[in-house]
Image (cartoon, rainbow, N blue to C red; front, side, top):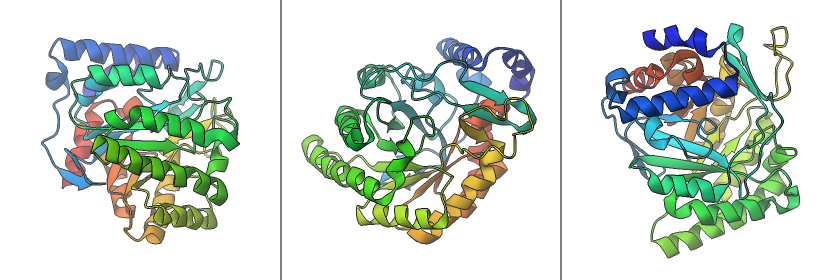
Length: 339
């Protein structure tokens, strides 16, 4: 934490996307030099089983930080119990115009409108094949921005077929606020039309590859009680393997008076914590332990992670917490959750 606290003011002087790239490249170099474990000693192994998978600890990396799988071994060296890469789409796409990523340090928050910028699923698979990582690797998939919503299932089917042999689990991103119309896939009819063929394909691929790869669905925090109940019913009916709660929020009320607070995009970081935890609690009651929840959104400290588990999550994911607290947060959180 101390080392990162010295470096953070320098990084925060840079454009967020530039700082992101520099930080990851610096971490990669330190790992190649054998400094990774010295600078960021991993937590003691605290194995647990979720979705039929064995995790070395309960703290994972949320999707979005390593969209293309370029830094899998580097990030694994920080001590994560699992990694989720992506969101990846069938075809490469540039995402939304820059600037599209904004820090709000006064609130420990980030607003992004990246728009699924990525190099395409084939590039990601090539990177995954080169990794030495043997832990649980989640691959988060989505649709291309120009694929009509009524044909979104085709993009998800394309991606699931591509990534299935290489994934520990597959996450369906239907909740990013930065791809027009994507959140409509959370509505009952659309969700059913998406999940049913994907579950059929999952079972077909399991028989082909001799291995069952779980499917998780990532939802938004901007849901009312009826929407939570409806989504839960569909997940239970089609035996979806896990829920990831939550993505970023469109509710900027807590930061609207701050610089960049009115930028378009999804808000993450500390202001999302309570909203995300509330959704986890609601899903936990409705699902009644019929499928596990991966808690994400506003995990800025070990106490925040413990709060997510108390609300009903089995695993937690962090992203914005890394930006504000640094890599030492991984070890600190993993050890706190074990206690």
